[in-house]
Image (cartoon, rainbow, N blue to C red; front, side, top):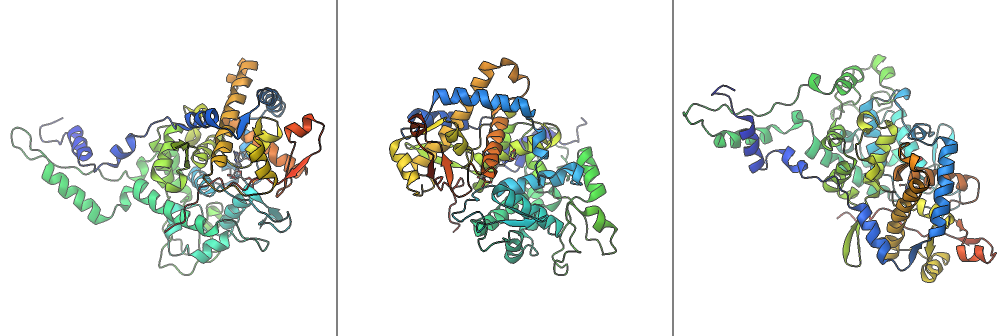
Amino acid sequence: MSDDEADPELLELLRQSLSLSKKAASDEVSSDTGVLKSAEHIYANAIDVSIDMYGTKAAAASLFKTMQQRGYSTQAWSQHDLHPAIEQGFSEVGMVNFIFTMDLLNFSFWSELSETERYQVEYLGKRWTGYKSLVACLRRALDEGVPITTPRYWNDSLGSDDVLRHVFRSATDEQIPLLEERIAMLREAGMILHQDFGDPDEIRSDEKETLEAELDQLALGPADGSEVEVVVADPAPIESLPADVAMESAQAGAEVETDTTAPEITQSNVVSEANNDEVAKSSLPQPERRPDLTVLRLVEKADKSAGKLVNLLAKHFPSFRDEARFLSKRVRLLKRPQIFVADLWAAFNGAGYGEFTDIDHLTMFADYRVPQMLRALGVLVYSPPLHYHISSLKEIPSGHSWEVQLRGCSIWAVELIRREILRQHPEAAATGVNAVLIDFLLYDLAKERESAGEISASLVCFFCRALRELGGTLFKIKWLKMPDLQVVPRS
Ligand SMILES: Nc1nc2c(c(CN[C@H]3C=C[C@H](O)[C@@H]3O)cn2[C@@H]2O[C@H](COP(=O)(O)O)[C@@H](O)[C@H]2O)c(=O)[nH]1
């Protein structure tokens, strides 16, 4: 390096000491999520939920057998009715943005109404409920030309409350639970993505000038007093983005910049992810195309670590920070950050943006559906007070000790099932049997039972272990109303 060139390491040191470099802020993220440790702590101190050893062994055997029979793998993810796939015309940017949007809102589809009256979404000539109703809303919006999976859109004037309410519209009188909270979460996440992972091009000019001025003042002249040229890193020109992203954005303009002065949004003048090409051919004036790479940058910041990506989500996004207090200790459950990473891993089959070196460190995702299945399999056992509370259809408030015990013990139970499978079948380690696939399978089995009428949507029939052993009948009890998201009213 010649004398008059600025020392890049010195400049980075200056930036970090002034905490001007975003790079410094996110490098402190650990790859250890702490979720399994929290789950073990909850299990070790739970008095209302326990894990049955025999049930766990039996569940491990039957789940492994089912996995073998179905050849269960990440491939199952793309075979789902509504999940996006590259083969359907989604770009990689579009897939990542879709999955982020989906898992940002992937909570609480609970209804107390009957199958016919509960919230449901009409799409592709079918009625979708539960988690699938959310995915159907996103697909339907894209088909209707609303770029609902483009983070930039969430705070664009075109993305009004009315437009977003229309995206989640119901085919029945019941609307999607927590609609206003979901809209607020979209806007908050869009702002955070722009602030923390925004395109350097989009840094406000005054912000950039401030940065340059501060660095100018601090640039240390070399010993011989010659001038040091302060270089403020220019935004990476689009051609220097990873080949696949540059290609995606050059070809398909995966995202469309919504021009706030554009005419009222109509089906034809907004380019959606899924039908870029058709509209590209249309005669309409095409707005400037620029991909929204903020989620990609978030994913890339994790350096292919699943644990780091989970922690980045919990660190930057309050709505992903799924934690609770149990016996006056903070515990981490992080259901949706983990399910986002798992969905990326499955959607991309462990490659590209789905490649994670530590995917096996993820745990089960503590929702309200998989615990039902664990109970039905005889893995989870409830204390009489908890069982009575549930069977008398009483709600369990968010953050209540019972909720934390149910979620934490479910995570620990799936870990014990995973260990038992590997104990019974050491070869399974090579086939990638991990908590993610066990969880996915438990969820899918629960939904299959629901479709087969064994578990109705609003009333969940449990084989109460004690009754079954006494040859008792099926206990018709309603699953506890346990919102899996701690919704803090937005001030
Ligand atoms: N632990 C766990 N929880 C999951 C899922 C999924 C869907 N994942 C798909 C991706 C790959 C798999 O093959 C699945 O097909 C949704 N949920 C949660 O359930 C609740 C919705 O329930 P219901 O109202 O009945 O649809 C809600 O809290 C939602 O966040 C999962 O996989 N694991």
